[in-house]
Image (cartoon, rainbow over the protein chains, first blue to last red):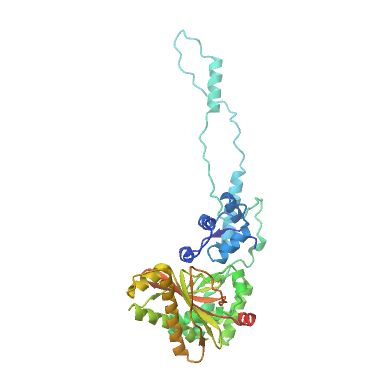
Length: 255
Length: 155
């Protein structure tokens, strides 16, 4: 795993997961410093921990389920990319040229007999006016939330990684499992155990490769990002219940 | 092991609570865990072998164990006592399971672990973890059945 450039965040149930876990004090510091924006290696550097191997630390802490890698959907990626481009464009606006137009200066009234406030005085006034700061509106773009950098280009270029980045929803599969196990009449816990019975047949390596460490059975937004994993889940359903899973049929059944 | 077999363990733990503290615990939304178990301060494991091999464990933070023990009238709360208590809980689960399953499964003698240390024996990589809430504290019941790949690797 090359975690240095990756961005991590604490899982939502971090407090629960942290219970009873023993870590080195600096590891807790690192976990508490995760902000979901800063690349991991940069975070370590900022904390004066750059002598550590970012990969080792990341492996250890993700392995304990105390931090999750930040991944984005295609839509989020494009939004961030747009914000990133705008921020780059704004930064590239050249600074304003010194004002060349003459500035009208009204000479202060002078009393009779006093030395004339002629040309030298005007010149001084003029240069003071030019040196005075003018009012400027500066729009500071929000710092990009993600760690990847975007090169400004005149034409937007579609990212090559975009295909298939959107996840495969698991809800139809879970509904199908519950249906197979006995349907809605099934006690909730039995339905949840049926889901476990399927997932224990799914190769764990595939699940972990999709950065899934725990799976909340009741979460209707569950999705996986890897087609191979999705297919493995379908195969596990089929071998657990001895049926053929047809996605359309299951979707229809779900309503 | 079927869903019903697994559910039996959940029932046994629920009943244990109901009997000892006269109160059914609240079962939260379970998760399927794919990483090594995140064990809390006190854990009791029983290993099961039969048509499928696996394990059942209960793990709890110190404050959960202390409260539970107090409810039974025991006011002391040293490590040894709390560890014994979790072992006893696992033992009760094991003997209930033996009664229900008969000769279908072999149920091991319970093993206790303290301080969140990882078990010195193999545990199924994918487990069903059910949070058990009682008096605002959360323990976890873990159930795991070895996959066929794990079983082949182990043999």
